[in-house]
Image 1 (tube, each protein chain N blue to C red):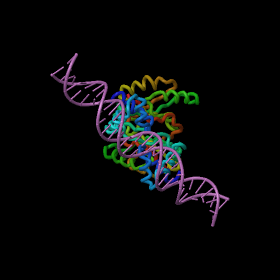
Image 2: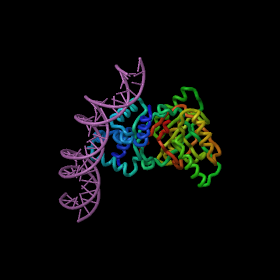
Image 3: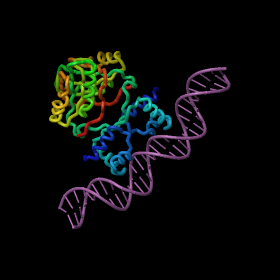
Image 4: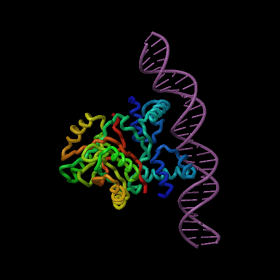
Length: 151
Length: 151
DNA sequence: TCAAAAATAGAATAAAATTCTTTTTAAATT
DNA sequence: AATTTAAAAAGAATTTTATTCTATTTTTGA
C-alpha cells in the first residue's frame, strides 16, 4: 500500500464506475499498472465489493430508524442467538455489538410507520431475550458518506 | 418502477460491476432494454452512485464509534451551525438528526483510540453548543449491508 | 378493432478491459 | 561503482462490454 494505491482507493470510493483509463490519466500512469494494482487491491481484500448506491426514499423506504437494543442474558450463546436471528430481517440493514449503555445498535429501513411498527411488534420484540428497545427516528440525513478517510 | 426495474436494482445493489449482458441473461431479456432501464434509473435518481466498498480495517481504521450528541440550544441557527461544522470532519462518516433521547447520532471511523480521543477532545468537543457526547464503541459488526429491502 | 406509443430484439459500432511482450526502473549484491 | 535480479510500467494487440441504430413486437388507450 503506497501513495498510488491510496489514490486509487480514494478514486474508487468516490466513483466505482471510474475507468482504468481515467485513473491512469489522473495519476499519470498507463492502464496496465493501474489495472494490476486494482486487481491486487481486490484480490487482497482492500476492496470488498462494488455496489450501486440507491436512493432510499425513491426506493419506497421513507423511514430510517436506529434502535438501541438491550438483552436480558449475556452469555455467549444468547448473543449468538440474537445475532443469528437479526440477520434474517431484511429491514435491519446494519447491526453492531457495542460497548456502552446498551448491547446492540441496529439500523432499520421501513416503508412507513405502519410497517415499522409491524417489524417492531411482530419481529424484533418477539425474539426471546430482548430486555429493552429504544428507537430513534431519523429526521434528517446530515451526512451520509460511504467514504473512508484512509490514513 | 416495475418488477424488472426492481430486479435490476437488486442485482446492482449486490454487485455494482455486474454487466448489462449478465443482467439481461438473468432476466431473460436482451441488452438494449436493460441498458435503457439502467440509464433511466440513473437519470431519475433511483441509483445515486456507484462505489467501491473498502475494508475498513485493512484501510487502517481499526475503530468504529457511534456518538449520541446532545446540544445545548436548539434554535434552527444552532442546528445549522452544528450540521455545517460536522461536515468538515472526515472522521465523521455519517450524521443523522434524530428524534429521540438525544439530538444527533454520528458514526466515526478512527485509526486507533489515540486518534479517536484526539478527534473527540480537539475537534468535536471544541464545537460550541455541545452539551453531551455519549460514545458507543463497536466491538463486532454483526451485519453491515448496504442492501436496501426494496418493497 | 385500430392507431399510437412504448418496449424489445438483433446487428453494428465504439469504448473499455484485459492480455501479452518489451522496456524501464529500482533494489540488492558483488 | 558496476552488475544482476526483480518489480513496475509502457505500448500494442485482443477480447469483452457498452452503446447506438434500425426493425419488430407488444402494450395501451381511444
